[in-house]
Image 1 (cartoon, helix red, strand yellow):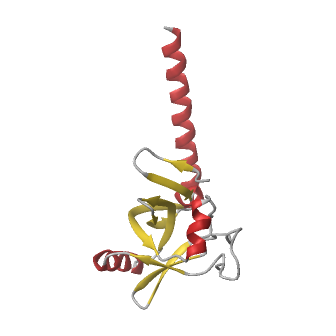
Image 2 (cartoon, one colour; image 1 turned 90 degrees about the vertical axis):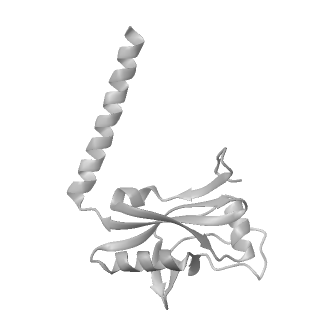
Image 3 (cartoon, rainbow, N blue to C red; image 1 turned 30 degrees about the vertical axis):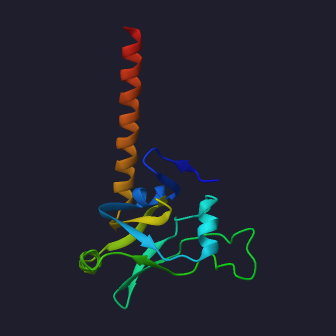
Length: 160
């Protein structure tokens, strides 16, 4: 069963919330995925984990590694390997831009979300630089301050 079906035809399978916590994301791209049949069926059931995923260049092609798509429960001997390397489909200009950006020190490519658009599996990848511990604490503090301010505004609006 898919986890989240939006009104815009996007069926979200998995999100990597840890990536936005651990990295400052500068650019995002939507990439297609080369998948086997049982991988698609497993994704349609809503099973995937992007937490340990990353993307790497091999021979001028971008590959997604570390993403866990569990084996399809109804699969037979044709089932896929859960953590295999998967090719990402992007335009040449996008690949060049990503390659140039990741050559700079400290940048990496992380998957942010995995979803279906019009029946095709897509992955949103982000180019990010790792946050330091104090950056993470500051981000958490800002989020907490926003929540507290919103809570105060709601209470004031209710009173009068």
